[in-house]
Length: 251
Ligand code: BTN
Image 1 (cartoon, rainbow, N blue to C red):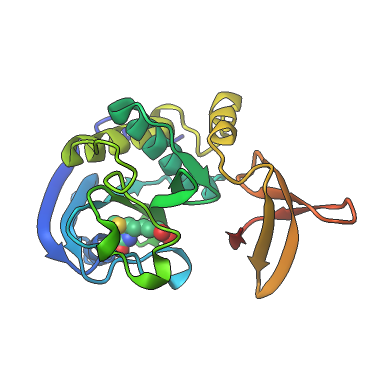
Image 2 (cartoon, helix red, strand yellow):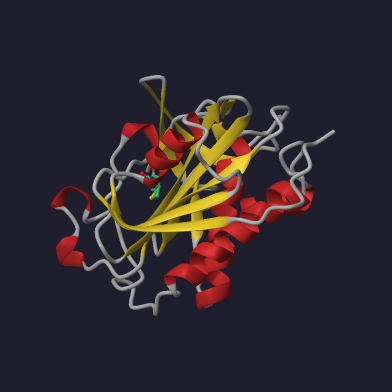
């Protein structure tokens, strides 16, 4: 039986500045000093973290928050948490701005071919299993602020000349939509065909040539599909298809 998470009243905590909201929530969970369902946001992060140990540029003018997803421990589709949070983010942005974004597998939110934000999902196992989902979206960041080494890859609503959504409204909607996929759809047991189609429709990576870095080795091919396991299917030049579960698309 799935743990009963029907009473999901969330506590919202906001800070002006912190190192990383993901790290803060992980520490709170380790000390068992956290409300089961909470959302922690900060105006600025000094040590914002991204996937694969990267740093996440988090100056004033962005939305940075993390929230807890208490799990039952029996989930079979953990890789899908990142994809579901990405889908929720993309849908929330579209609802509030009318603008469609894409998901670069597995965790980047793209607009006009550039990164608008990202998701960092980390699992914490203590007494029970909890996922900490961190979301960072570039709202009002200007081109001049972006460090030279990432300038050509990063964008913001401001740079794209799109009126950004209101920060708190966007945060609440992303959490609400992610909660609903995970607890109401119970998508962690088996992702529905409908949700999988939505993930596939918003994929930035499908159909594109991709150099994939996996376990230090470069694998090149065409991304053919996101699978029902949340992995990626890559068609290699000799026609064979390789399933990729983790790593990064370099394209
Ligand atoms: C990525 O680009 O690989 C993921 C970026 C995730 C950034 C968010 S911002 C809020 C939360 N706190 C962090 O330190 N990271 C996530």
